[in-house]
Image 1 (spheres, rainbow, N blue to C red):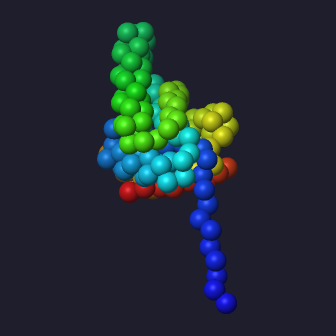
Image 2: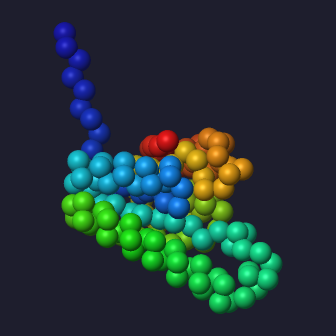
Image 3: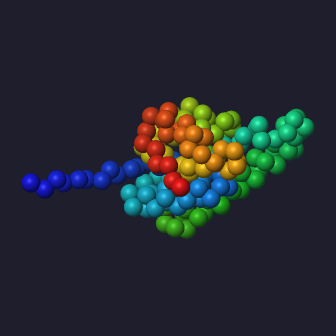
Length: 148
């Protein structure tokens, strides 16, 4: 008796991106799944205000500059996904601690059926599974693919 497996089809994929190599691999995997399943793709990045020093955080210009940079990066990712053939792509710029913000704010708002994230964060000290990806994998209410 042969076992018949039907692979799950995803209709709404959320991918978390930053400037790390693992996040870029996560993006490529998310695009691949979106193309294969003909699904909607949401691309999220999180503005971490704790990345700014005290003086930058108090300066609206520094925060605005960082926000504009992240918005441009999101637009670049969106264009890459569209150029690859993904039919519908949305971008999300959130603010806070990445793992917690994605789990508590972005996932309930976007309602994905798959979240794709890179294993290593962009910060050297967080290059281990116990960082943001670990938090998302542990607390997300949907399937999570961690890419390395």
